[in-house]
Length: 334
Image: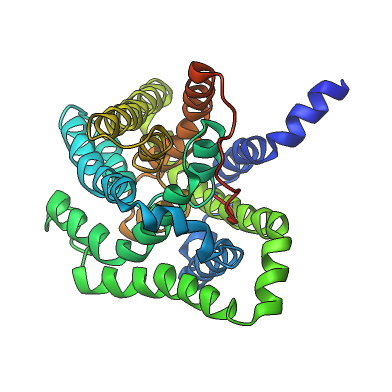
């Protein structure tokens, strides 16, 4: 029992993710008005991204800046190749709700913590993953809307997609809080305190992420019910296969292309993880703004946590090395 309790404690976020999603689906009728509070969900995103960025020390990315090839390749994978692979997969999906949800997931930035954690676990250079996270989040207010316009244009159901409006919203809710967090760190005592207590910032940010998942579950429940049991099961299975195919394909392409280009092993390992991981927080925000199915975004995030654990263990065992000589980066959550 003690062993089970310890495992549940270590995986509390994944357990909570399943719980809040289930509650949101089961009680969606009585909670239906909550996701429509734009100020609430925008406020949650702003606060969470601020908390995620506050413990982040820019010194942690020094290695990534000194050897920029890995970071540049990762950004190309994350914002270039992955959206193209997702687009190809979406053409094979007959359910347009799933296809659109997958495309939204494809244009979100890299995660803040999991890319770094899994990179380091595999013996990679986590400074690159931190740098990629920072740059993809800062660039998302321009790149994500452009990809969405390429995907959807003014197609039926997407008339609300405005480039200017999306740029402004993502700039205010993603770039601004991360920028403010770094300005806050100018006050040295605050920076030291935030870095020393990054664990608690991580927990607080993850709670905010769970609240966004909760709202997403409330929104998607009626669509699953309308689809019926059989179609709903097929929808989930198709989504799982699609998101895992996209993630795994880009992961291994990033890994082998980095190796082929002559990057050091720690650097091309970082390319694999940072080039293929996506953040749940921004993805859920875009999904709800565009009224797109959130299941692909949620399953992409959960799927990458599971499969990247396997990939990290494999890469670590491959050389018999554990956590190479890159200092732990100060990161927040997600």
